[in-house]
Length: 275
Image (cartoon, rainbow, N blue to C red; front, side, top):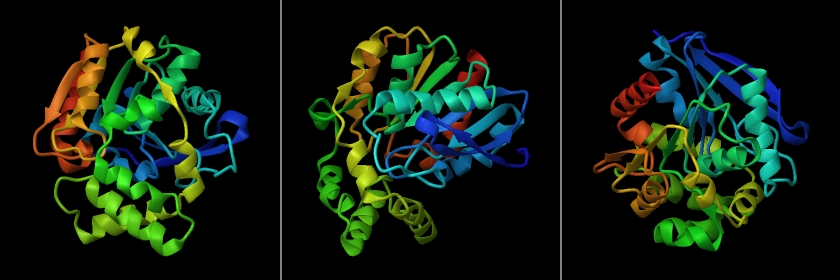
């Protein structure tokens, strides 16, 4: 059985309050889960509430602007603040050689951290349906149906925003989510202000050079049917990081850790054991 959940607030870049949940084995290898655009730590519940906790120390943070973390009016384009957020969680929780596990936009946040702090304090990196570019460099790697939702996701009109978010959530999985899954996800997506989603996707950057220089062990996880971050993104990452192991999930969409959580958890456990 996984350990009881513990929560706390950590002050990140600029003093922003970040909500952090921890479970699992306090003496195990730490895994720091970083969610994607408009999500929150609850996306990782099939890891936090799983048998992974017998061996691993599992930590999930609500990124700035998301979940129960503070939602400042600006600063979302500042890589130094994102780097400081990750660094603050690592330091405050005394995470020794953690695995940074970034889903989707979480890949950008990992890159922001590495660009400021390097990889010395990191034990491993898992990129799950992740992006490492924003702006024009990333557009060829994003699905057209996802791009079509962005005007609605950026809209302050409640009905337009909610409709776009429901479409977005349905695009994350290869099969339609069950109603309880859809409305749980819709709930934590809706609490993210549209201005935050727009600010996150208004950045222009590429972490390609950083990834090429990585020596830390890397696991790439990607669904073959991902309609949000296309499989060509993982292929690009594999070329940049020749030592990375790539795990393809056939018939799976943008959320391998939810759509096939048993396999993902086994992959994560094996990766952690290999370090």
